[in-house]
Image (cartoon, rainbow, N blue to C red; front, side):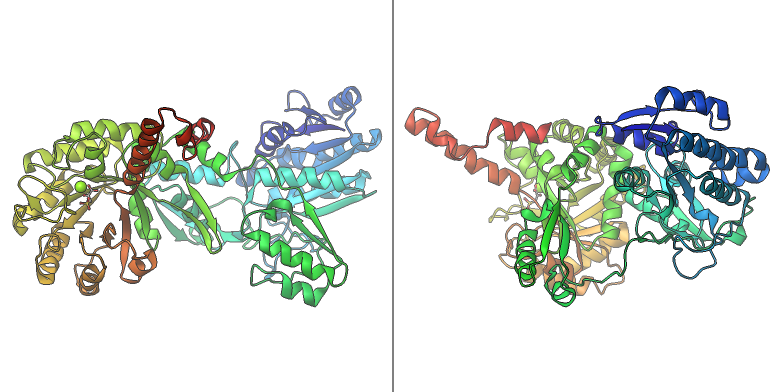
Length: 627
Ligand code: SPV
Ligand code: MG
């Protein structure tokens, strides 16, 4: 099959080009205006005669909605006359045509989504030119289909997503209209749908189809989503269409209903299909073949069992290969992040999530595990949100005690190596912050590296790890001095997103609940963004009692828990007590240590390495994590 694509420089042109790489069984030709000018019928005929395509995909269009008001002639030439010439020439050589049209052929007054048979009534020159194009193509007698889509975005060319990303990086706030609703459509999905529809197209006339991604949203909601997902600190302000001066009128609601061949949509409230199948008794059930393994295996088994009752058939469509979440993640890591973007992530996570899940990292490999590990469970998708740069594991992994014998500069060298290969946010354990005179330099170094938060603990003197039983020589700082440290952090930080987390050691040092609460209120008042209440009890009782009281305080700030000794405590329990961050503080190193000792012992005992192999991972697996 030979496919000719016009408009190769546009969003859809690019997406089709990318997709064509998976379809080398077809012969492709991509053209721009210099190679094929759709407004020149002679030029079209020459190109078609030499290439002789089976299909032409017209991805060329004039899409500047406001610009069309001033350039009506050009808009009609590109969107109506050109497609007509193309359709005519295609029809003459027996090629089929795919033409992309728009939701803007509708006036947007319909309360329901627009179907393919609804009456178009464009409000502006752009929509009128596109509708004219549709009508002329229909009159040409060409076969194929017109596909109407909406709010297209992708990686190349101009689109709303890119505009918002660009503006959000430059401005503190952006105004976006909130009273126009539509369905944003990812251009790669559109490209794939076009190809899939071409494959099954058996029509002998021209079909009009609707295709957009499912889910409607206003431009303003869409902008908020883009900004939140990108962790950019920019306020999106909702405005009305009537508040702005735009040359062209736009439809208020242009939701396309793209279910032309669907008779009825039946909601399914559970993962299990049994109930619906029993009531419909279909002859065929179609499903992707991705459910043969994993938790959906059981769902599949049940479907097969139920279908047997009336000899129904299950047809499994091979799942699209090469689109894996982990590959997408690797791509993100490959692209990397900037210190600024990484830094701002934690505050966003804490605002957005019930609980932000942090795991200790002491080197790049453990950082990579945190970055990449994710699991799909029955009730959702899970991963770690960020990393804890622990003084304990930073020291122990260097064979030194956790008493500040590894200085901040040395720790920063290690941390930078972790930052090189990860993108998730980091909370830095700065012990007691050191001398107040040095604290501002530490904050600057951490911020420069892209760290999201510093934790300082209210202890003074030679530091001892808090989980040690004997704390008798350890002293707690007085409230005023510690508050001064918090103030220094806030004064010296450059970015508002950088967080100061005050860690209260009252329970570690055997002090009372009221001491802990007094400190929490004072630290919060001094400017702490969050309060880490530490405990080495076996149960969470102590911290939960604290949480109950502190969450009612007018100085309440998000609370942080470090469930090392009370490790039976669940994240759900922490959420119920209004904890917003959980730090698993030392588990990666504690996991690695016995594994290493065990292996070394086995080699030493057996004078060969074979007996140790059973517990080792393959080189391949470990390299896969890295590449
Ligand atoms: C660390 O991980 O270094 C900590 C937490 O500070 S704890 O070991 O519990 O003191
Ligand atoms: Mg520590």
